Amino acid sequence: MNTIIATLFDGFWLNIELFILTLLMAVPLGLIITFGSMSKFKPVKWLVKTFVWVIRGTPLMLQLFIVLYSPGLLFGMPMKSRMTAALIAFVVNYAAYFSEIYRGGIESISKGQYEAGAVLGMTKPQVFFKVVLLQVTKRIVPPMSNEIITLTKDTALARVIGLAEIIMRAERYTKQGLIWPLFSTGLYFLLFNGILTLLLGWLERKLDYFKV
Amino acid sequence: MPILEVNNISKKFGNTEVLKNISFSLEKGESFSIIGSSGSGKTTLLRCLNFLEVPDTGTITVNGKVIFDGEDPSSKSEKGIREKRLHFGLVFQSFNLFPQYTAFQNVTLAMMLLAKEHPDYKSEKDRITEEINTSAKKILDSVGLSGKLEHYPHQLSGGQQQRVAIARALALNPDILCFDEPTSALDPELTGEVLRVIRELADRKTTMVIVTHEMSFARQISDNVLFMDDGVVVEYGSPEQVIGNPREERTKQFLERYFESENN
Image (cartoon, rainbow over all chains, first blue to last red):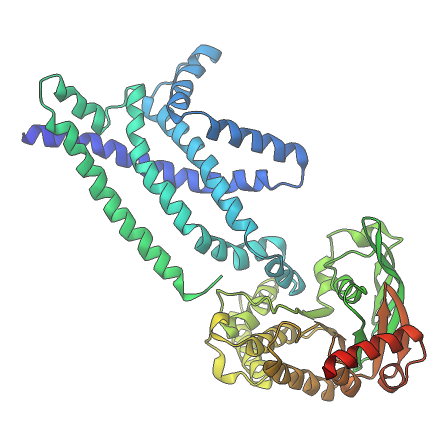
């Protein structure tokens, strides 16, 4: 039983790794996509919007396969690491979702805030970083929390391209007639998301000192 | 020499002409009020002065220097727009304070950002910060808010918020301070404290352009009043003349309607 738990732990570590790396990269990439989708230059705007539509409109599971296989099929350069493939698919997918949350947040800030900054002689980047960003952050914490919690569970999808994450490992035991390892995986996610919920709740309270 | 000269400013939104050849000028230390009904173009005119809207034609001259010329495409570009804007301060109808900053920080933010661009900033950081802090406290004190420095906007009443907004605009020491209906978003019992601050500024010879619906206030504090209707200047002169004894039929009608509704 101890070896089973150790194996599951090893597997879950992979889920966590995928989760952290995806978050670290998708959060900033999402912002870049947001700027694209809000661009005044129409071709960029429509290109980015089409991209977001495709990414959000197709299953993440399918995107994992496409990232894994297409470099080999199209360019003769097979993807060397399954982890890299999973990471690319997750980062792109989540950045697309994040970008829409950011866009909603940015668009919810009143025009008066931008104008007040402008008449005080602030540059556009100053208005964005010094005035708007924190207000947007406060607005998007609740919807982002939702996405982030979904991400922890989505990492289990990485098994479709052969990454030995926790559920894949647990499933192997069912062939030996053991079902409890599979069922127990829920506890790992539950515990992890419990901690995450506390952290995100703390962040929400941290931003409670002002009202938007 | 006038501090501000506005010449033949016109502005269209789509097919609607909002401003039609507006001209006026303003001496240093003058309080200047713009009155007129909603939709007459007053606010658009003020926004043009602050380059929140770009006029289609006309010129704007500050201290003898042409800072906007509709004929010159380069003056419509974003380049140099900050320097132009810094000639003017603007107090909005809806305050537009930055909610995540305290009253004090609302006043110092833009000053700090400007100071950071100064080449000496790094070497004299402490002195510059100290100067900014002192002047922010002094300005907030002058609008009667020395006790509210650490309050966030949502902890202040509308009148207090508007006074912070006035302090914030004053902090950058603009040549001309503009007010866009500064009391229209306030409950009636809170307008007095804001008007009092503006009156004090007028007494101290602050150059101001005030778009307002407060007719008796405009009459008391203004050196000159401009009445606008449908995008044109209908009447322009001393408050005694424009509000007290209007010559134009449209001005008379407007004032009659105004005082009628006030008496009701």
